[in-house]
Length: 130
Image 1 (cartoon, one colour):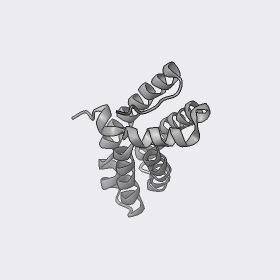
Image 2 (cartoon, helix red, strand yellow):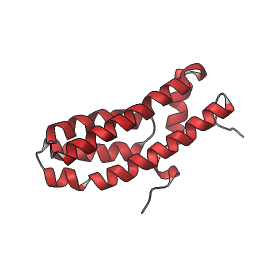
Image 3 (spheres, rainbow, N blue to C red):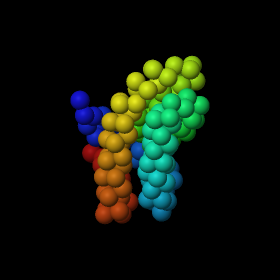
């Protein structure tokens, strides 16, 4: 099953973070996260391909916290599971979670890109109120 955008990014968490950093910095902060997502996804995938548990744990750990901060809760949970398995020395479990990780990473990336375009096109991004 392909995760939907709504299921991979908690928009209220993301909007709160961007509000906290301010409208002037929001785009740069989002850009930095997208670059980190790309870089750590690549690093984690390469580490898994090499069966390098230490590198898998390190990449998963790096991505886990930033993903949670940006509202990518399911991605954070997936990386936490990979980190835990890798630290326990369980290559089979760590590698077995890579499929879910890849799907969530791709879905999170697509939703972040959509959010970046909204920000770029609409200036300040504000939640609607009644």
